[in-house]
Amino acid sequence: MSMFFGVILPTFCIFFAGYLVQKLRKMDIKSISTLTVYILTPALVFQTFYTVELNLNYLLMAVFAIVLLMILILINKLYVKIRKFPKDVESALILSTAFMNVGNYGAPIILFAYGEVGFAYSVSFMVLQSMIMNFFGVYYAARGAEGVVAAIKFVFKMPLTYTLLIGILFNMMGVNVPTGVLSAVNLVANAAIPAAMLVLGMQLADLKIDKLVDREKLIYGVVVRMMVSPLLTVLILLFFPFDPLLQKVLIVSAAMPAAVTTTMYAIQFNTLPTLVSSITFATTVVSAVSLTFILVLLG
Image (cartoon, rainbow, N blue to C red; front, side, top):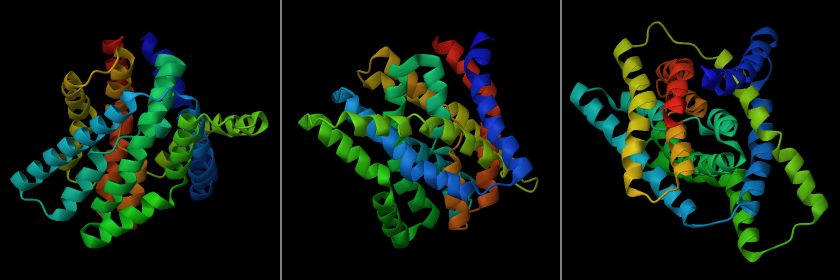
């Protein structure tokens, strides 16, 4: 129970604060989310990649993320083929099971559980997942040639793509950023995670499980996202020479609920948004128990 009260409960309290404000005040989530995506998170990404010691782990982490994504997509395709569901169901299930909420949920959980070193790993994985989700998520929401073009455009519209590259370049070249500028970046970066957590709570306030959603698809989505994904991660990690802390970070990240961003993609491209939002909400609720169990198991 100490893991629940020490890690999960504090995180959910912050989520609940955002949830409560949204229920009572009905604020404009888009404006706050845009501030987080375009200013706060890019500052956090630059701070992380400018100061971190770059090594082979980061390249292998990217390979790991792609491998996990491809296997989850394959599982969804096989399930849809066996059940003979239409393509829009396949897209909706991929959106809600293949992309995990490692940013405004995973990063704070890992910070509370594993400290600053684990948090640095988590932010790095968050960046990788964000770029993967911005490409593959948009592709599966839009599908076809239009999906590929939309996905490529979306990746290059995201400021974290550029702050990532600049942070790595400055790090490798040993560029000394003026102390005043770096202090300003750090100040903004420190606000990224709390703001993202509040935004998640606000987003959850606008999500709900639709009673008309097929129960089979809902249960399938919850099982794949919350159980199959972390189990797959444990198996995949047998082939990667990661240190024990990074292994724990990746397992916990893979056990995160569905990313709320995929619901926005589903709404934008009309890809069964009620199914996607229902799985997102359900996995977030279930995660309070499942993540506690996984954190205790990992130690």
